[in-house]
Length: 122
Image (cartoon, rainbow, N blue to C red; front, side):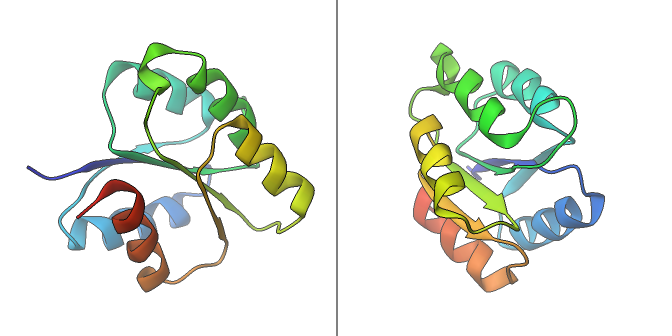
């Protein structure tokens, strides 16, 4: 049974890179275009892990994590935060909201796979 990952990013090229990398390693990937889209998908389906960007229209990454963590579906799902920013304050906010990991963009495929394997299992 393959693990299903939700990739949340408003950049089609980032979503594509994430999807191609993870599908190539045997994962199933569902894409969301922003935090609001992610919230709708994450309450409708169970994911083994979620990767979310910060800066997105409608609902940003931290807003998405905060809202998702208040729902029954949000319990125990590992969330990795993806951002071009590396400020400690943003990291602290993401962690406080419920993210368990952090990746700075741009990242390479090997980094992405290592993080997903760690949080979701192979």
